[in-house]
Image (cartoon, rainbow over all chains, first blue to last red; front, side):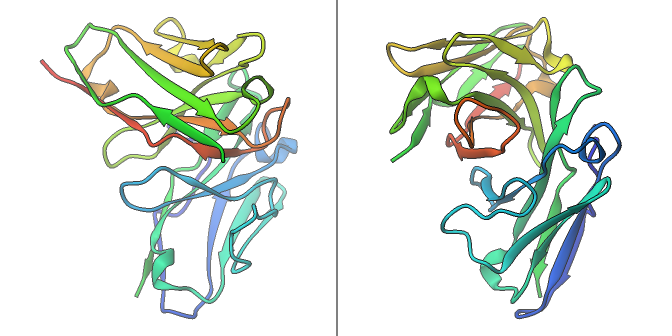
Length: 112
Length: 122
């Protein structure tokens, strides 16, 4: 039972912009803990896409961007490409669960 | 380059225990916390716990307390995750994942092992 809520799926045509929301609460995102985003291609381990709300590790295209406000965060993908079809997860820390790391419910991005 | 190499797939009977290893290389082992995350078939990611490879201290998710033990061997730069009293719901891919920044936490998981499939079936 995830404490971070994401839409189950989003879709877009190649070249379009899509956004994925991640809704938390006052004990995680709203408490000021950073949000991180991961991309998981089928059959592979997750890959860190965005860390500390809006930072991209080296090698991640600038088509991916992150933001955070209040108790929510968002991941945006601009110039959608076929290779972006994957599952995406947000992640943060929650102080109400004896100090626990929490993941979002996950969002499947489909490129039409 | 940083690598996390996990042990191979396991098949266990209900009630048994499983111990998964994760060998780290390419960085200073004791400087980065390590996490364990699991993913049941077709499901999302679930955090299980964290170990500090420097001193060996651990913190486990409430759900797994009493059933999970995480240890490390600094001589072989390997961390281990042992889960006991296995049930069918523990069937999942288990990942080790390194903390992004050294000597601190909550900075994201930047390197992941390839995953170890644990199947619990009678």
